[in-house]
Structure formats: structure tokens, C-alpha cells
Image (cartoon, rainbow, N blue to C red):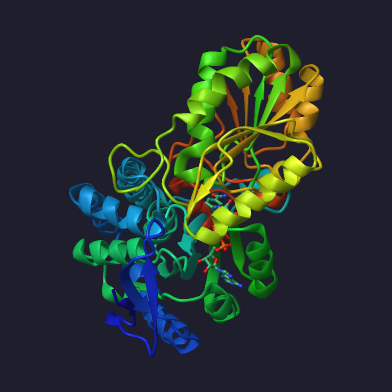
Length: 472
Ligand code: NAD
């Protein structure tokens, strides 16, 4: 596919091959964009920002609604594209397309809700006989830098709100998975989006990042990706607004009264969806000593039976990781844990880019598979003594994106909710649950700001205060 900027589909001086991680076959190529492409794209988006700022709310909403309908109409084709470039099982890619349509529809609705408020200026002396109100206005040009793991929906989570709020937008999709983002641009243009209001430049983030993040004409950067890159972007951004959606090592806490059938089902889903490459995957399974062994015995065969293989086959639940080197990395981290005393009780093997779903017992807080973000298909069980100890273990992390507890004890559940610094907290559900409309974002090193169209629109707009004097 070509990249898109300056109102046109563009080639580059070199190309990047996009491969299917299952067999390494080349599925397409995209241009290896240059910093000149970024500059040209931003030049074009300056005009685009003016077009969007003048466009009526109903029209922005209509375009986004039409895009949502086109996403639904193209579910099969887009799902195949996502699975081919990213490696996730086709059943999950279909769900991602449906969620993308919802994200665009929610954005379409938010386009009509940009409001200000009347401010009671006479609440303090000197404010008499004046009328004050706020206006919410677009930032101008928004830059969206997106990760590989949800190559369509996480682009929608930035493009939808940015356009709803009346901005133009520059997308820099992940180097490994640019095709889904380019397909979204095609659908937006088909839905009637003016060509000068969007750009999608493909290529390496480390090469293009500075040209995007240091350009003063970009007023807002919305980034989803790793904490290391997030930090670099913040350093380059200067006086720009930033939203940072970063990683985590989410805990799933199991208290003694938990329904273990439900916990086991939740772990199989929250631990292994997209081969564990989800920022809110259940990575640390913190289990009360009384039920630890029973849960391990229940889980091990269930995890062993998860169908792995070619992601394009309907029966597959876990496909390849995005790169073989990532599957190798997961293997190294697990070997390291085993050398430090952990046991692999299910999985623990690699075939090419596929790392087989793995359950580990005997994990401890100083192991890399516990304290860092694994981003792979393995769950590490940690034994806890009591409620307080479970909460302490769960809270012992520099991350804070999502956390879950299974218990029927309301007091213990509230202790957990109060004791964990996490952007999302789930009671009797896994940490990987997300509705696209909810405020979603991390605390601590998991990020800054919230996504979810209503909340992202807030972050992609500015407030102006207008005061009429001398009215009395
Ligand atoms: P990554 O940080 O390697 O890359 C993300 C994006 O940043 C890519 O587009 C990449 O090209 C670009 N990039 C790389 N270096 C850059 C630089 N110096 N300047 C500017 N841009 C640069 O992340 P990834 O491997 O694609 O995704 C996995 C990470 O994303 C995990 O840490 C995961 O937890 C996180 N993630 C977070 C959320 C969330 O909502 N919090 C959602 C999905 C993924």
C-alpha cells in the first residue's frame, strides 16, 4: 500500500516489507517514509486543521458514522488484514473490527457534544455585571503514534476523537503493522473526510519520531506504546499536550472464597488473548495459599488445551507473536525465572514465532516475569498469605493500568479497590476487560491521560474563556 499525506497517496524512496509472523511471508510493502514526508504531511495538515475547525459538528459526526458503517461492511477483509500483519487469531481480529466501528460511532456522537459552560464571575468581588463563558476549541493538528497490538482499534481511538473535536490528524502507525491504519484512511476518505485533514506516514518511529514530536505546529501528541518510547516522546514534545497510554504487568488477585471455575476461565482469556500482547493482560496471578494448588491443577490442563497455530484458521485461539524475536525474548525470561526457582507447569515451548501458552508457579516479585511487562503468553502464579498480603503484592509495581480481584467479600473488594493505584479496577472479572466508551488510561508509569472518545475529545480540545464586561 502507499502512504497518505498532502492530500494524496504517496510512494517513498525505499520500501518496508510487511510480513505474516506465522510463516514470514511478505504480505505487502509500504513506503519507508522520511522526515521530509513528515514535514510535507504537517504542511498539508495546517490547511486541514482550518478545514476541520470550520466544519459543522453534524458533518464531522456524519463522516465518522459513515466510517463506522464502512468498518462494519468490511469486517472480513479488515480482520484478515489485521491477523496477517499482526498475528492475532482471526476470531479476535473480527472482534477488533467490530470494536473499531463502535469506537468511531462513539466518536461520531461526541462530535455533537462539544460544549462550554457559563462561569459565575460574580462569585468573587469585582466580578459583578459581567458575563463569562467557556468555548471548547480544537487543538489544531494532533499526532497519533500507535502500537502494533491493536493496529486498527487503537488508531480509531485517536483518529475518531481527534476528528470529532475538529482537529486534523497525522498518524504514525507501528512499523510492523501499518496496513490496518492505511485501510482506515481509505475508509475515512470514502466516508467523505476532506483529503487535506488526514495523513498517515509509514516508517520507523525512532527515525521519524523527532520530526513529529519537535514540530511546533503539532499541538497534541497521543501516544500508545512502551514506557521507554513514551519517555523519549515526552522529552521531545516540549510545550505540547500529551496523552501517554503505556504498558503494565496487571495483577489478577484470587481470594480464598473466589469461584475458581470463573477465575480459571478469566485467566485463559485475560492471559492469552493476542498471545499475551495486550497492555492489560493478566500477567501476575496472585493466589491465596488455601486455593493456590487447586487453581494450578485446574488451570494447567486448560492452558495446555488452548488451540495454537495459524492465526488465519478459525479454530486457532493463540497465534504467533508479532516477531519471532519476541517469542525468543519470552523464552529467555521464562528460563531466567526457572533458574531462580520457578516451575513451568504448562507450556514453556516455542515453535517459530509461536510461544505456547504457559503457566508458571513459584514466581517471586524480584523475577523479570513479575516486575517488568512481559507482553507475551505466560501467566506467573504467586502465593499469598491473606488479603493484606495479596493487596501488597498486587500494588508492588511501578505500573498501574488494570487490576482485578475475585472475591464475594465486599469489604475485601473495596480494600483492594482502595489499595491499588490502577486506572482500571475489576471485581469478579479479569483485568483485560474494556468497553470502548469508558475512561481508560494508566496511573504511575502506565501513563498520563485517558482514552475513550468522550475523554479523548476533552484531551484534544482547548478551553477559551470569554468575558463580557460592563453589562450592568
Ligand atoms: P513501541 O513503544 O515499540 O512503539 C509504539 C510506536 O512508537 C510505534 O509506532 C513506533 O514506531 C513508535 N516509536 C518508536 N520509537 C519512537 C521514537 N523514538 N519516537 C517516536 N515514536 C517512536 O510499542 P509497541 O511494541 O508497538 O507496543 C507495545 C507496547 O504498547 C506495550 O508496552 C504495551 O503495553 C503498550 N500498549 C499500551 C496500551 C494502553 O492503552 N495503555 C495499549 C496497547 C499497547
